[in-house]
Length: 325
Picture 1 (cartoon, rainbow, N blue to C red):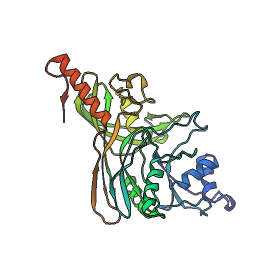
Picture 2: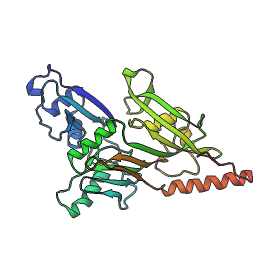
Picture 3: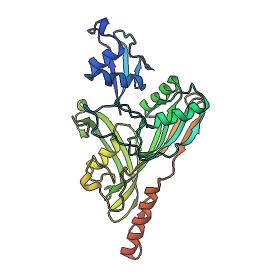
């Protein structure tokens, strides 16, 4: 997901100035994609989320769009969620909830209408207590990534939280298992991310051709042929961590899209990506209270650490793995 800000030009005549039509015109997307963005709360008008396709716009109105690109054709085969267990709630109040997203589950449906998504499952659970309950997406995690995610229960709360993310206020920390060892062991990767016709992301140096992406990383554990790194996001672009680490020739284990040739590891046979959103800190949009949430490591990470550490010890007799934290 990335962010776009557009201004409604006076050149668009009123008959074509409905929100759905303007998005089609300015983004050059089909009507179905435009409608999906609006209905899923991805579009704001003058810093207020709008979910009405036929909302009338005026020249000069500012549109804030959480841009989610969609493939031109539907996938060849629908992929079933790999995790059908209960969604773990880390926090829940009348305004928002924070959950631990399992890997293998979309955050929101695409325009192809997947029925099993994190948002739909959370909303169904909340409706058991309140039939009028609604859930609004604030930020996303890739399907095969797990970890902490905040969801809003109203448009006002969603907008307030999105403003925090736009201002880079929430602190987001991830852990990742990567191929090889980063050099230097800690640092910052900064680039502009562009998107190709197959929706792959890649870095460019020209600021006019991409979105600024800043990733801070720190190596915590090194094994023989893999490492555990902590990653802190300054910006939150789609696939940002995956691209930056892959372009450094140290892709995340299990990543099928970015440097798949290096991302395969015998101790990581899982279909998921070895990336986990471990910590999220933000300010409660209503009470002003600072909140921090942490998700424990998934079992796959613990299994990998144990296997890699044991193998390193057998090779050296003293242990080749070392902790840099």
